[in-house]
Length: 383
Image (tube, rainbow, N blue to C red; front, side, top):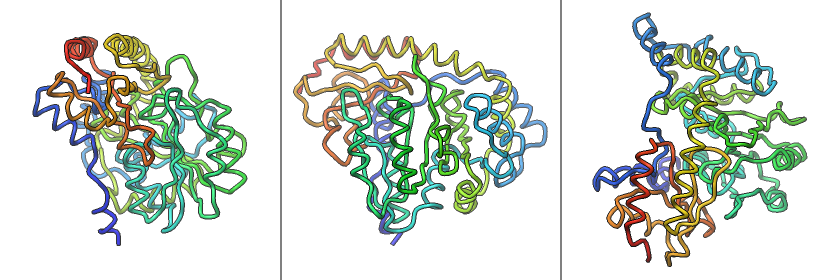
């Protein structure tokens, strides 16, 4: 059964579009990875760990130093008190944390509510676990939560709300009122909330509120994050899940049979970054805000209506005004027409709400964004 489910899952769009960028020499504004490394001090900490005997298996739950650093980060920023020994587990990136959470908590036939458009690993893992996804659409142009639709999505089979804020790919940051509506539903129906917050430090003028901080939610929320986005080390693949011990145990029960452990010399470096370089993500967010404005203003000028996101490093354009009805066709044509790669949002939807929407990444150097805009401005983008 699991093998059949795996065969039913299409390949990730990111691999396809990145390969297209490499093949055509296009500017890749598709996959969301920075084109510059994070803080040099963290790189130096990794070098010290490599030379200091941290090259064997770390503990399955993560090194004590990193688990303590995660707990301290959550307490410092959000007032969340965590026991680093029982309420934090280190994973191979946030993607493994999501996979292990779903595998550890979802039984065949359980329903999982997730925000649509969704990061593509969410439906894949729910499918592998034998669960049933129930998408809740964040509709363009504002991408706000429809509370009535949320309540209507709950059935007697609902087990989990799989949340993502700041939200990839729309860049929406859920408000405290929206989170309170989710909390009310979760408490009323005794649901687990798995909250992917990897972009927690990358917001622009609006606060990020972890849903676990709301009344009655700490005991039912598993929070996921990583070093990759906030510190520009996506290739390190150091993530974590935190929350009540019974939910963290469920993650570890699955995680120990996935990678068991990873990142021996990188876990001490991640702990150093979280503890000693806490101001760095705010500096990154300031830089990204400038790049966001550069890209969003430029896209609007070339005839691609684009909303300025509140968080993450992605912006969404509507291509309907150019005569396109299919974002995938637009993105396949774009490298040849303009020498730029974007991601079609329709692959992150069950509904047709994303058919004419595309995503651009602005976590690139300003000169790269400017070149992409120059190419788009010189191209004929009409269908």
